[in-house]
Length: 358
Image (cartoon, rainbow, N blue to C red; front, side, top):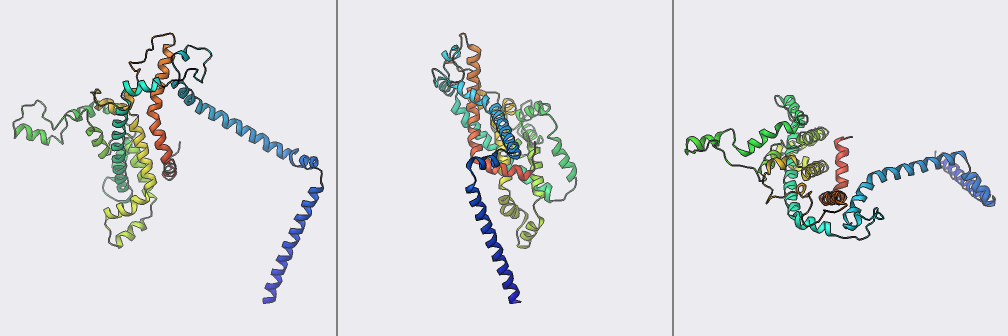
């Protein structure tokens, strides 16, 4: 037995030695071959020509796609640094001859950019965190628990993704304008405290964070049906053995969800948060519906206007005003780009796990 093993080892060593000698012989043979002959055999072949054509085509295609995607952003960024004189100078295309920061200064000062940035960040954080937690809880319930009318309730969740939000505009406005919980407090105010109001209500919630906070915490905000569906699909893929092991160790449902399920769902939670944060960041439907007084509460979509300190009454009025509005858009988009740069890896991982396509 030992002799057989030793013979096999010797045969393998001999085979390696022969391959090594063959490789050395080939190298020496190539060294003796003239340079132009080696170039001919290596590059002047049909295989190499096919590979070269394919790589050139792929490079040109990528350059074309990149140009189509990036050129609009580059033109807007270049236009934001142009002065009034650059828009009437026919020799100026994309690079400003008289670069200036007057457009940025005017937007910051006249359009209250930093106030709008603070208000929008606060509102988007409130909605993002609320929707992230609420949709995680609801999605976990649909995925892991059995209860009556579960299918019907989930169908209603899907239905919220189909119904246009414009159809709910009036009812949402009236509910937040005359807010009450099933009429209980209004009844108490009217018949116990003798309120003389025509429509007794808790409060007028307009021009505050309360309408969007209530919608986010109750799972009725914009795209919450999609977020619940994503979390449900993810939790369906979580093995039941993890929860069963936690129950055996004495953990309850809440402790299992907080200590085990949520930590392993961080990529999905970050994905939901970033989607919610981004959509709320540029939202104009709900903010325009619930914030009727924009004098003190300014949001980023409200700054897309011509600053009063900029004189646009001249020959290139339309081009100059378009550049100003594009600059406003860039200043609105910049914080989202920074957020994506920090969370892109987790976001992509969450999208892959959720199965979102298209």
